[in-house]
Image (cartoon, rainbow, N blue to C red):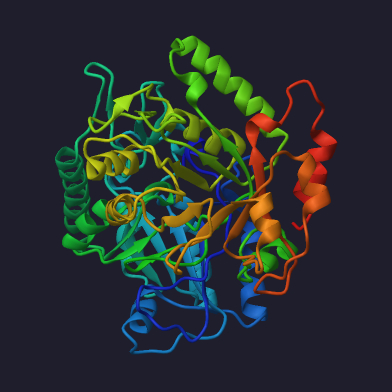
Amino acid sequence: MIQRFLIVVMVFAATFSGAAWAGSLVILNYHDVTPDPSGDRFAVSRSMFVAHMDYLKQNGYVPISLGYVEQVVSKKAPLPEKAVLLTFDDGLKSYSDFVAPLLAIYEFPSVISLVTSWMDGVDVPPEYAGKLMTWNDARNLARNRYVTIANHTHDMHRGILSNPQNNLRGAATTRQYFPATNSYEDESHFRERIRNDLSVAMSRFKAELNLEPHAIAWPYGEYDHVIYEEAVALGMPVQFALADGSPARAEDGVLGRMLIVDQPAIPDFAHLLVTQAAIPRRFVEIRLDAFAGETPEQQEQRLSDLLDRMQVLQVNAVVVSPTTADGKKAFFHTPAAAIATDVLDRVIHQIRNRLNVRFFVLRINPGLETSAPSVFFSDLARLARFEGVAFETGVSRDLQLQARRVVPKFRTRVNFGVFGDSPSGGDYDFHILSESQWRASPSFDAARDWVLFSSPDRVSGAARAVKSSDSREYVNYGFPFDSISKSSEPRDGIDRVVRKGG
């Protein structure tokens, strides 16, 4: 729970791959529960927490244990209506002192995840000094029949260098950047580092609690297929991530959770418990060609200007090309292509964290020049964090198949789409089309079609109401970032655009 890495609030209807649910499961993720309200976004006061639990009790919600969830997955038990799983991260003393005894009174099961290095008093974040439970507290919890203890890694709840610009990303999924050699951690060393950390954590649980957790909560809610495999190999098939607002399509049995932040009052808490429909995409398309050939100082100034101008747009998605407009050079480190400048991760990281944009789509050019497509897409997925890939018209079927095969090994729940002509077949998650294509289209799929207008001014006069699957009217739309004038005052126009259909 280090704030610079993650701010996410979304509800998730949890599913395991291949599991049939009779209803939906809401998984709540709490951190600290304090005697009084505090300035910590990830804490709730005791009185508010009690109000949350009272609301669950009084409104027919059924808190279930992690063990029961596993029975549902194996089809040995039905999922109750209005099922809820309560989870708590980081091993704060407020859980052992207040939360666990209180939940025992309610007879509500819960899951607590512990960072073993912090339990050992090593590298404890300053904001947690004096706030963490002890191993003795954990031993007492292990005897509580309403408590399940989960792994939260040994030493991966921290940031490591992810690019030459000194950004820090979560250690569990980031391939570390090494400034001395201008290189990145390769997959064999990455996998070894993950395995060693998880092994140490399991040994500490065994030594202190005489148990080996079969569930793990990934720090910052981030995971990929590599760390999933390593956790399963060490006996942790149940894994927790955080929902990111994409459709509820968990893979490999990883459960998404709703992070509780900003102490939601009861009306807000009640709203969060109801599974929400897909959120309309409001996006801009940006290109990075202007960063090529610039000094680091010039790149930082350009990025600062980009962030300042984007801030007024209130978009929730960004389309960005990982290569130059002609497809000849890459904006990330890979031996499979010429490199324009290593800036893709920096730009995505800053937009994600400064502007709270949670959905990034990489636009793949049909002129892509690469000596090894599988290496190109592997490095792209290893070193950049994104949620979608869109192939332009003309990208070969073979290239698309290679991307579809390689990218999911590193980027989980990735969405694949097309950019331009209408796709053939249904093997895509979204379609970005121009305004003219949209107007000429005999049908429109509100769930999958994104309209790229030539400028913000085109939106208000062109948008037509489209019924979504839940009967709401909206259109997913966006425009090229360069279509927005620096000298104009876009606030009113952009606000009007953002509100339309939202």
